[in-house]
Image (cartoon, rainbow, N blue to C red):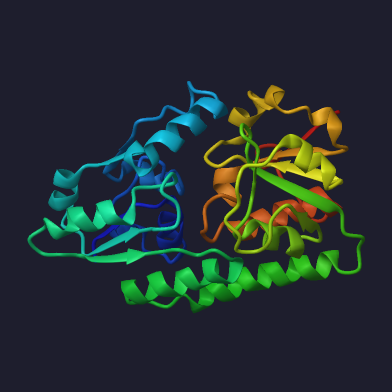
Length: 287
């Protein structure tokens, strides 16, 4: 089986299922596990997140949408994939499903195109089953292990007071984190604000964040590692809220793959001191 992943979360899933050796192509954003560095990259982006501000990136994506991403159809064809993993959930997160479908139609031997579109935490775990079936294997042991880890967090935080939590997935404009993130917060012993499970959110004002009276604000911008987020904290008046944490969004919160379970474990530590995290996973900001 030859697999091309056009979604970082799908790459995570393939790796968790023990089929990384089947991966013959990936996106420029697929950075985990480290072994994928040697896999050919079939996508490009027109936006340099390292040189542009959050506001500049937001304006670029608003104007260009999925055209932000280029797909090397010639390289894709030369890789001769049997399976292409993609998504149709967010046009500014990855190459659009339509563009992938158009490219695949040009290939002599058409691979199967599998679109992953989870919106909730159970749907994220279900994607492991879907991909495993396409690979001819079983995800049952992996899913069982992930669910057991979630159960351990639930038990560890049971009966504790639930802090009110606002999770922010973009800094400028302020964009609350929806989809599976509210469920991550709930399992970790918090009360999620600003978004419901499965919700595709919209930009809001910082005043709207302050108005819901959060005890904790989580900053986990889409695609930003903590170092990148820390470099742009000045865009938000963080003195307006009592407690702020900078988290690794792309590793544990933005991408609907198996590592969202680690995100729950990180939140349990942030909200209740349960378990452990390293400095790269969660950084508290002093008011």
